[in-house]
Image (tube, rainbow, N blue to C red; front, side, top):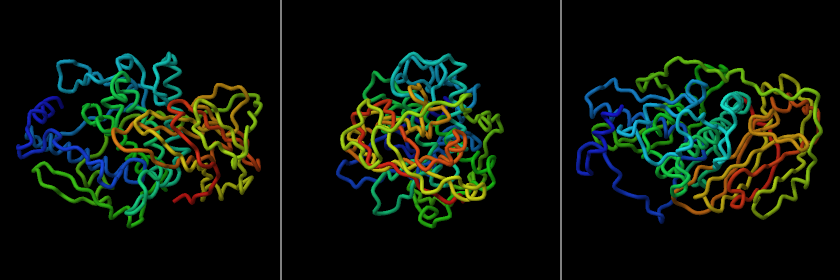
Length: 422
């Protein structure tokens, strides 16, 4: 791995193979954004594919393969040792010094260096989060992949579960908070300067592979032609500009690779409710009266009406109940942003993102360029409602808890929808 990277960094712009970055995006160009939408996983799969082929070409090894960093399993929940040797091309100076081995990765990182949980507790929380992001909260294509994004649409309509968390938070956890916005990994525009970016995204791609091949048989890809026929331009290992379509990257075997069969310890890591029940934290405003000012550091609790209650097993099998937070305006995308979302949170409880009442987290890794934007977040809550005994309730209380960058976030609305499970 170190050898091809050393060769790649030694190239100059006039070389036949791609080498250093020589251009920057023009801020006056129309924005095309593959983050925060249904193109996130496909574009990054192809990015890894061509990067891997270029490195293999440099060293004359057509079987060269990138490693993946399995931060979803306890044995992989520390920063990979091969990237920590300061004399290796795999090393990067711009990393958080507090998160080097033996520190345990925090899949619920909130862009601060508060005293971390003990490693044993952090591992359990990480596994609970992975279960939600991959299983209970990702039962529909839109929930997992992200929202539809086509020509003429506004960028970042809404990210999928795996992009929001753990993808964004591993980026934030790895980057150096003392650098500009958390470079390198902590800023999307500089993240790929750190070689661990490709190991991180190898595991993100593996999550798609696992969902399709190892989880529920019904976990299919989109069949929408607007998704299948979306095209990207990449340079291949011969420095040719090639056009590739989403529909051609769905089968990893057709691309020449599969993933090593390793343990998936989060498959049954379902969060468990506390024994004895709890008192509900009441709403402090109706959903129609959300503040039009930034969240700041104040928790917002709104009462939301459910259109259907006491849903039967067959209905739940066919449709997922989805909590929708819309009109999320980010005033400053150069900031790290995170807020957690709870349904019927306990009164006075210090619930975190692994609690059974947690629907998920909205997390934004800083962008190097661009101005304010509006997006949305959706959370599958059918299993959550069953776990907390709220499926018969006509109303639920949704809590939005700012963790980072709350002064740059405004919420437009909160509601509940029902989405067919493909």
